[in-house]
Amino acid sequence: MSASTSERALREAVVATALAMNAQGINRGKSGNVSVRLSKNGFDGFLITPTGMPYADTTPDDIVAVTTNGEARGARLPSSEWRFHRGIYRVRPDVGAIVHTHAPFATALACLHCEIPSFHYMVAVAGGRNIRCAPYATFGTQELSDHAVAALEGRNACLLANHGMIAVSTSLSAALALAVEVETLAEMYWRARQQGEPVLLSSEEMDVVLDKFRTYGQPD
Ligand SMILES: [Zn+2]
Image (cartoon, rainbow, N blue to C red; front, side, top):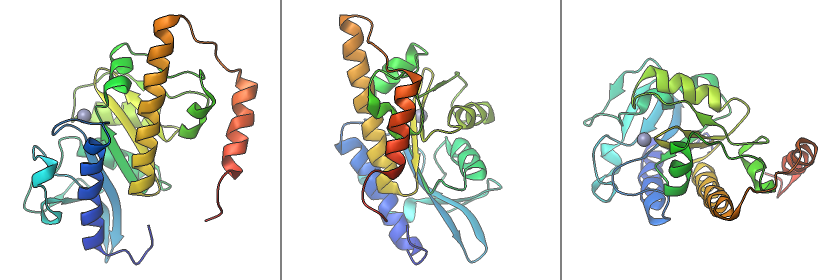
């Protein structure tokens, strides 16, 4: 996200990302939520999808601005999960956007309180040797926020027990792409487990992959 990106453009991008989340099959209905960091003119916080609105009916004006102190500004109420968005932005200056979904395979694993281990090298795309599953806490609570922040330490994605998953990145498009990748990995892991116990890559091999990912791709 460039510093010159207008708040209007960010609001439009939040709506587009929420719609894309459902169109790409990683979320259904009104569950899930999307936010992007907003720091300008003395405002320090984020823009987040409103609570309880179908994304097809959500306009840029329905997106709610929430300060890091938890004050909501807008015509709508923010997503009931605004606390873990705030918690993540507070401790992760590298995070510019957050996508939270109830993606079917990631959530099925989360209902088993099962992390995604190093069964595939792409697990490293989330920043570490595994993708953790945060312990259960009631939706919307500070306790859930604390669990999510801990599960995301050194990671850009985590599962939430009996709930769903979170993907974070520098931009909305990157966070959405990571959420799609995590759901793809969750589906692969689920299917592999139907046939037996997947062979895990060693910590040493995952460290090699993590090192390669740090230098992979086009320079910015
Ligand atoms: Zn949720």
